[in-house]
Length: 191
Image 1 (cartoon, rainbow, N blue to C red):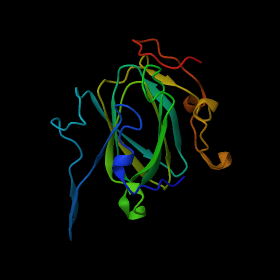
Image 2 (image 1 turned 135 degrees about the horizontal axis):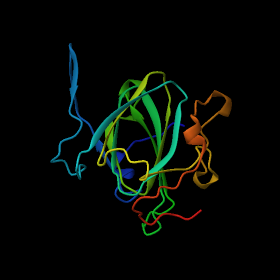
Image 3 (image 1 turned 180 degrees about the vertical axis):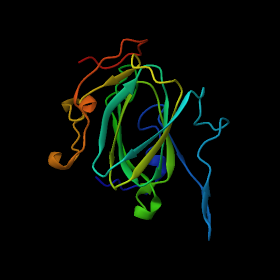
Image 4 (image 1 turned 60 degrees about the horizontal axis):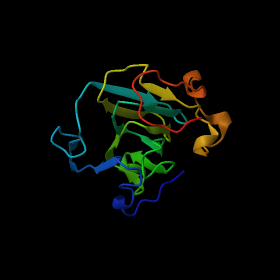
């Protein structure tokens, strides 16, 4: 599941409106400082509604979620995760495109991005923790609304994705079922 990244710009625009902002780290003997996002950044399209934190054990899979209205901004503060995005928007020029990369601590190798990722409405998002105690911090443009969050099962054939040995995966029941949100819609692939 490695993601060889020699040029971050090659990921940009693989899915319309997905934006990846590389982060600058200022390290010294005390540790480091890293600014994640400002409301004046091009990547931030406001408003800010909720900030959440998810701690994951190795092999935890969270997949596939999408929203009709909400934007997400993902950042792996500790650990490493394999991120997979899939464009469900039928009107998008990148409809059906899949984007994969590893996000997290650069201590795990040069192919790991230290970045924040903007995920627009209509783009399914998923991740797998590659190491124990992986911390995903994410900001959302809307407060949690179950009528805005849709789901596909983590192993849905639509995404043609292999998460690895199924016997080793940690997947909650919600990520094994489909759910179509009832709130305001964008145009998504029909099933």
